[in-house]
Length: 110
Image (tube, rainbow, N blue to C red; front, side):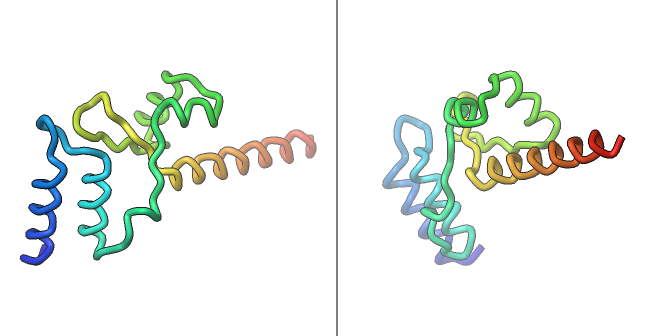
């Protein structure tokens, strides 16, 4: 990490540090600095509730997917503030659809 990147991270932390926790916008800003100044807006983060509603699954299913390595949670501020990358959710959906198609094809071949 360059000196300039360190200065920018320190500045971002000073501006957004609130009650001992780093805000989500600060985390995105830090990640954008770390990723060679790629804009943080390109990555969308979803809450557990948003993922549960969109995929129509339970909280326990999300936790099981985390333990199985199917989803990588991003923990912000503390363990209770968890986000998922939209791109990870999309990949999981595509993988699930492919598996369903393979299963259907196998059933038709019997």
